[in-house]
Image (tube, rainbow, N blue to C red; front, side):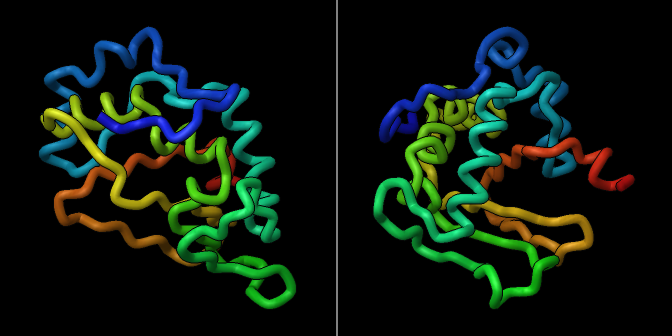
Length: 159
């Protein structure tokens, strides 16, 4: 299973419906379609709010741990405002991001979904895609990507 680097005050919901998820139907849909939606939120509202704050700080170059991430694409005043922003391996730079990325509950959920005995993080991507921002491409080569929107996607699509 994934090992927790450091547990923060905010964590995954991990209780209730997700403890017994995925169902056989969800796993089959994932195998067939390459994606599946969870029946309930994976992240708590408090974690989402905290991550939004940290994203602003991280993309401003403020790295809580004092360590830079492996890659940091987007700079204030240099990059286009509507460009999709990306930080690779943000867990190195921020303990809250690390607590989500390396969460045992998330690793167990991914393992159950993919039918694996366990899982390990290959890389995390902290993405900030503004409405109208550049498209984001994803690996399809045996990786499981867990995407957690920090904003209501229907609202973002409509506004």
